[in-house]
Length: 334
Image (cartoon, rainbow, N blue to C red; front, side, top):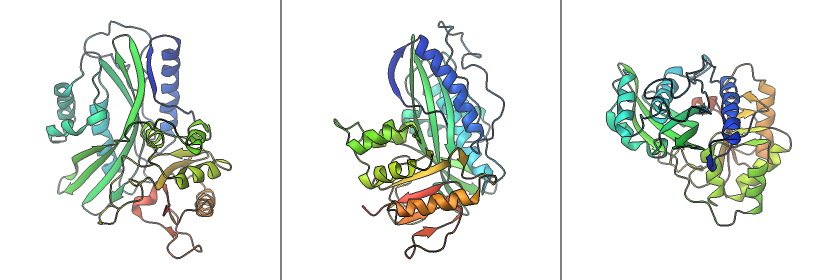
């Protein structure tokens, strides 16, 4: 899997061309992720006012789609479509008013004030492209759900292109008409620490660990416990890890309970892809997932959840439920 990270503003030029190529590769990666690929969207400025900067284009993106293996494909699709509508726009169509129009155009009857909760998903920019990397369950119950939508975003500010992105915890409820969104909780990793710890630097530079923007920012903030980074490094010696969520962009409590989650305390991380195999897909070898979960426990995790219920370990060390049907959760006490 190609690795990307947010970078500071860069004038349009050779690096922006590389970003465009990288965006195409990312779209392909999303397609093999449960994000079964659909046709590529048009270039970001193909509608609306023509961009005064004709080349290079922002990366072309693909619309994320759930697979038939999902516990409930509709809940993820509703969450993702809203994030895509808010976080991408053609030249000259930035701002909250235009975002509200895009949300209304979805025809889902969503509250217009959801745009006011978008935070970093709606930066001030002339133009934006957005690629959903993964959408996982933060929790799914009979009538409520949390879907952290992990995305990368490219924005244009005059003749400058910036690469970034965020993770949005989308909250949904089920009514007689199906799933609908009632709140957005974007990731807020906080500022980067002045001097990252050596294990944090090692994770950030490890090409066998793919971190989306919010997860990388979590690590740079200095608010992630060393048990997490050490386990990542131990596991990357055997596997290539596609990390989805670390600290922010996840429910504060274990969904549906008042019990604090290990994620906001910087004591957990989720993996949605192992050695290029997406956890949610039925074609992913169960033996690979089982071995990975056991190795996560051996790396010090007291709480390993995934789509397979394993035996052995300490009492309660392994668990499986609908929420963890699409990723492996790896938690630590300290």
